[in-house]
Image 1 (tube, helix red, strand yellow):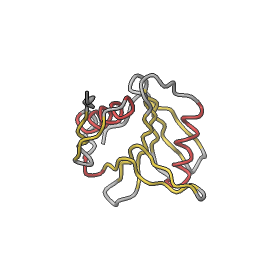
Image 2 (image 1 turned 90 degrees about the vertical axis):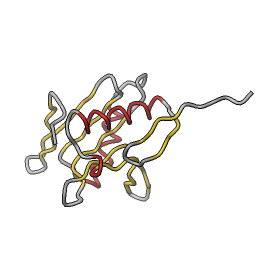
Image 3 (image 1 turned 30 degrees about the horizontal axis):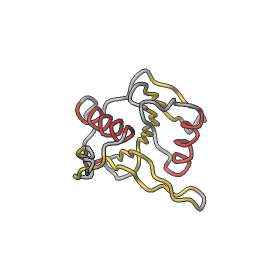
Length: 132
């Protein structure tokens, strides 16, 4: 018997992907960012390569500004995965290279959004994800 796998369409990459718990969170968050917060799909990159020291890692979602510079990084975890300091450390590594304005961490149940202030070396947690 062949087991059928469920797939989900990725509107950013324009292809079907295997539906895993983390992919469910990522695709639903992309939909939320696009439909509710009005971020254009054309400015989003999924699983974007980020070089950290000699490692090549991938950020779940990077949203670019109109000049093509990264503006937001989103790190997605499966719903059953707790968001911990390790999650914030992971997105901080990406941000050490990209220097974005906003960092977002989500497991689909809880979302944390931070605004970066590099001039004052400050991070502010926001109540909600800012609209585009």
